Image (cartoon, rainbow, N blue to C red; front, side, top):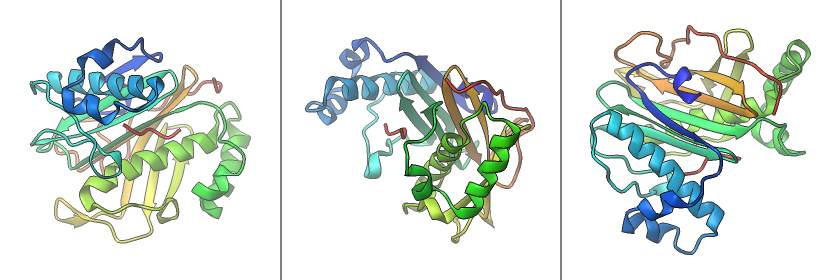
Length: 249
């Protein structure tokens, strides 16, 4: 599912379901220590998504290594690799690429239902809420508020490794293309320099299927066709279906 949103130079692995705990036994000692006092659900999420990440890294020829959370929980990737991980109820995924092939990467998965009451006002701008009304009128089968939230999460995940600064929900304005399965994010604060140019917009792709919403952003893609890069637009339409948290790692 997540692999359909990203070009060939990005390697992905995903798992459906909530895991049986077997991945916990494959954690490195340093990883196990991070979640030693966590509840079993959190341990399974942590282990499952790292199993996905190691599977994706293996596709790049990178041997298994501990993936320890850094500041704000962002994983510390091996030298020369960028990546992103996500998990929600019933789904875990990871995406990785060589740093020589892309500048930034963010993925997110969310349950396909609407956001809890009151959350949309916190995570969106007035113009975005107006945009969602129009989208809902055109395609009521998609939970557009949840998609907006997921798109922002993917944008923030791509942003943070480049800036070491948090991006507030009010600092990026999302516009979603319902037919193309793409979205754009206009940065309302000064962005980092990527490949010699100041980053002002990000573009990404989305899909709503199997009771899930997934989004992906790729910045500064440097080869392969079909990429969604900063300032560009994806070329393949997303898939929409009837609706079936945030993706920490």
